[in-house]
Image 1 (tube, rainbow, N blue to C red):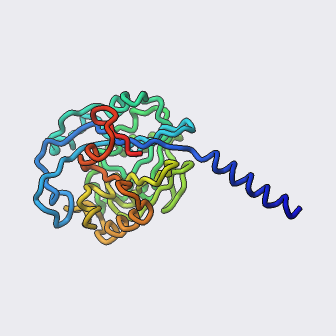
Image 2 (image 1 turned 90 degrees about the horizontal axis):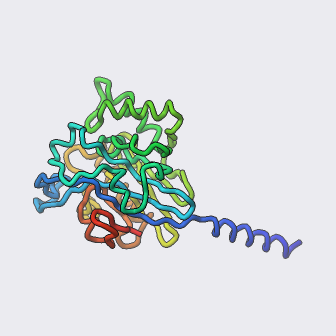
Amino acid sequence: MKLLLPILLLLQCNAMFSQAPHYEVYAVRFASSAYPFTIADWADKGPKDPVKIDFMVWLVKGDNGKNILVDAGFLNDIPNAAEFKIVNYVRPDSALLPLGLAAKDITDIIVSHPHWDHIDGLNLFPNAKIWMQQDDYGYFVGQAWQKDGEPGGFVQRDVRMLLELNLAGRLVLIKGDNQNILPGITVYTGSKHTYESQYALVETGKRKVILASDNIWVYYSLENLRPAAYGGTLDTTAYKNAMLRMKQLAPTKNAIIPGHDGKIFMLFPVISPGVVRID
């Protein structure tokens, strides 16, 4: 009996390890901005150096049949995009085609936060389960539109869309920080980019990668621990602390991926134009 227990524990551990999925992680650009932004426009007290701003989604492709997006992009008819001088737009579902995926193949979408450029394209993916923070959802559909609310970056048609997704049973509301929502994928909160924005940590099988989305806008913020500029967070201290935490969670080089910095497409191997493999 004394020998049997260690053997059983070893078999159980081996079974758990063998079931752990391996993930490939990609950044997929679907649009760019032609506006002459500087780092100072995106990072508090940043320099006036130019920064290339891209719009992207992130694909987590598993050997377990999961094709997971972080965020869903936007449709090109949304008026809010005009101020960014959008160029080279490709509909987000079409941007995935070079990776051999159609819209119907996406199994899950993790919503980092409900700004229009990250959720307006949700309905492009008819089979996806949508994962969103419960408190972010509650604020987005409720308090944001009250007199004391902050609806900046929110669009009413996206509110209606999320309500419909909830009624259809496709929306999963996540309750809080450090939640393992899928095998090898954990979400974290704390940056306060929106009321309760989240970012995703992916255990690829090789290392840990963090898809920060707008919890970090550009690399300058991450490298210099500068919060987002011009109201890009509801709490500048929380934004900074979230970046410090990310560095602890994923300490390897180039393991933390910001939400809009075009530098991403120069740092990683190119799969096709606008698509790079992060891991």
